[in-house]
Length: 172
Image 1 (tube, rainbow, N blue to C red):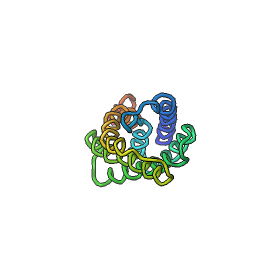
Image 2 (image 1 turned 135 degrees about the vertical axis):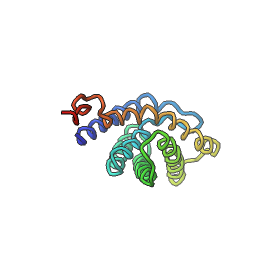
Image 3 (image 1 turned 45 degrees about the vertical axis):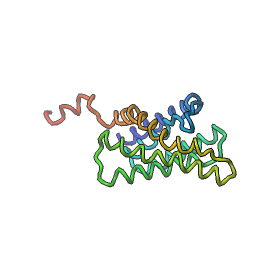
Image 4 (image 1 turned 90 degrees about the vertical axis):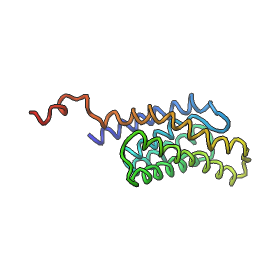
């Protein structure tokens, strides 16, 4: 059953990649954007483990770089580091609750702002300080709002309350 859920998570990430590239990639608010794929990779990392989070993060981040025509590997690096960091913070002793996700996602979202700007600066692209500092506050806020539907979607399969056989397993 776990492999089936991981395949479903892969397909959900694929749908989020298409939505991210086609629709949400166009919206930027003072240096911060709607990054549903980033939050989904964090959700996979926390729910399925850091190995799947890092692998999916690298794969979908690299695919996103290729589709958007950006420097190859920036999103792959960001998603992989974010997935690993989110899992390690989660394993410090947090329980799987919504408050835990509200704490982890804004902290890890800072990676989504800092690392791309550092890489772009190293390759000679200019950094606009105003957008960088405003993005440090807006990107975690946007990702925190996105975490509620994304984490709910990823946790649906793991709850398994809709199946009658599992509800009455002990009574049979």
